[in-house]
Each structure stands twice: as C-alpha cells, then as structure tokens.
Image 1 (spheres, rainbow, N blue to C red):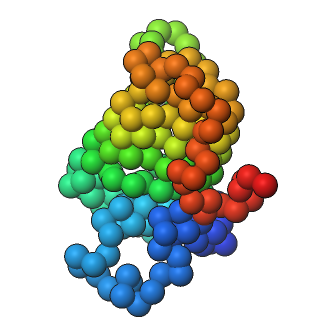
Image 2 (image 1 turned 90 degrees about the horizontal axis):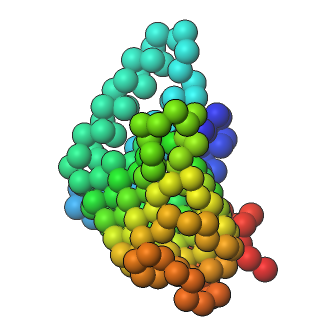
Image 3 (image 1 turned 180 degrees about the vertical axis):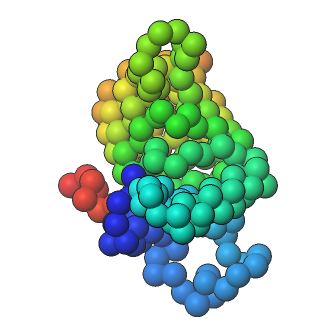
Length: 205
C-alpha cells in the first residue's frame, strides 16, 4: 500500500515509464480522448491506494476515500475489468484493461505488464485456509500475456513470461517462459524484451 505522498509520486512516475508515457507531455495531459484510458485507470488506482493507507479516524479523508473508491469502481466497470487496490507494485503496465480480473489476495511485484483477458485468482477459496493462502504471489518484471489464467497458492519467479492463453496452477521458476494448457516451461528467455522497466531498481543487469 502507498503510505506517503512521496511514495505516491514514485509509483506514478514508475507507472508512466512502464506505459511509455514518461515524461508526460502537455498533449498527453489534455483530458478527453487523447488521454489513454489505461493511464486514467492506473492513476485512479494509485490515488485510491494512497487514500486507503491514510484512512482512519479522519472523517474528511474517509469521505474522500469513499468517493475515490466509487469513482475507481465505476471506471473499472466501464472498461470491463476488476483490479483491486494494494496488489501491484510500482511500474505497472495495464496494456489493455478489458476482461482483467484479479483477486485482492494476490501480490504482484514491480514492473508487471498485464494484458486483456487475464485472470489472477484463488483456488479452494471456500476451504478453511487463511485469507490469501490460496492466491498467487508474482515476482518482479513479469509479463502476463492476453487471456492467461493464473490461480492457486503458487509462486511465479522474477523475470518470467506467461504466454497468451496459458493456464498456470504450478510454480514458475525465475526467468521462465510458460505456454499452453496446462502451462509448461518452453524456454528460459523470460520477460526479456517484453516489458519496460518503470521501477528501475529491479531492472536486470
């Protein structure tokens, strides 16, 4: 969760880089059709995360948080996606938002590039496991191709790539490329040349 204004600015700058929008030019700042809808979605997400961390006994902050939450929810519905706050690290690139569904119990590192139709979900949600115990943990610099399905108590290592329409319910080693149904390791090229490293702390050497 984003706990300070400085951290909020860092997340926003990293996201802009990963989206290929940094520095944000005057043309891109203009509202309306020239502003990418994916950027509007991400800025609403980051502001919601910041406000959520500040919520508490401050009535004004809680009211602002409520409006921000409703605004984000409506925008997600407009774009046909379900993306909760507090899941993705800095450097997020939502390449095409349509059809993306993510459980709030998943955790995703920096520089994730995610495409349309992706589902990141839980397995066995109705058993007696602790909350979040059945949700994926995804590392840094991970590319997730269109239509991929990732679910269960699994770990996806850093610099991995999940191919289009792959179904992944087992651990994925770092640097792997996974394709097919069920997902299988095809090669060890990983996410190299598939993402922009907005959060440069995790950029491979």
